[in-house]
Length: 117
Ligand code: HEM
Image (cartoon, rainbow, N blue to C red; front, top):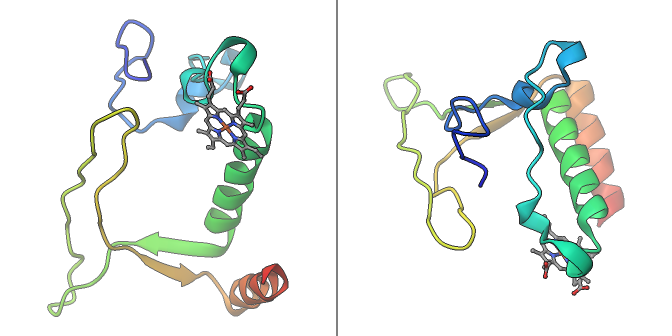
């Protein structure tokens, strides 16, 4: 459903801006509805789940740089991206480096984590 070329232009491409409204220069492609079910038994936690993912991603991209790991030769290690198939699809294992953007970012993350435990 999420990769139907009749609904999504170039559906395999990672293009979050596809969901922007037309007034903001986007294609206004529809948000997915399937992952949380349908009808009267639709997931009651969907708003909490979506808000939690939003906060997590926003925190991550605001505070850390995410990059490919370096090999012994100092070059970035390229890794194949694989996806499982089935009822839901998960990415296969790959390594990344999370590096705080600044000492302030690092302090913020450490402080936040210490309150979460
Ligand atoms: C990304 C996270 C989540 C996904 C993908 C997800 C997905 C789903 C799906 C597919 C269903 C079945 C809907 C159907 O039968 O049509 C469901 C049901 C349900 N979910 Fe979630 N869910 C998520 C997070 C949560 C959270 C955070 C909570 C609670 C805080 C929650 C509570 C429930 C409950 C109670 C049901 C049963 C609803 C019913 O049968 O009336 N879910 N969820």
